[in-house]
Length: 196
Picture (spheres, rainbow, N blue to C red):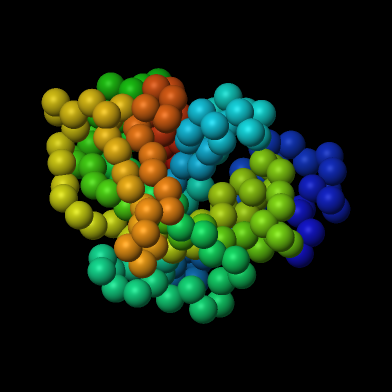
């Protein structure tokens, strides 16, 4: 399908998140459980490419969760793409307003490696930011696994990742590519979802 802003060119950021929230509420009314929250455009390069200064956010569903080591079923997806991520597992929910980086780190039980499979309903994976927010930031599937680690004593900027396909390296990344404000945005996202 064409991106939503083609038919609604005057929609704003609040409209985009309102559409995403309506999708979430509809899923929850059908028994879907929200498994977590996600961020998109978290690297300097992606933000520069899209002309933004803050990451965007969406939600993860229980049916999108896949077992570590198992094949990920992509039947029914349009054009899936895999991305390496760092998952933050919280001990307790964050509350806002006034949530900040320290709150995120204090609430974090552990971090672990993750792979997210993104997908977009938009033709040829072409969209603008408002359209991708409305489409829940292309969320489709995710898997967490590997070694859990507490955040104490870990410099997140020094974490590295190697993504392989059939034993061949297809991408690498480092925490240093993620702006220091990402945790702040994570805090704002939780505050927005959880309320006071």
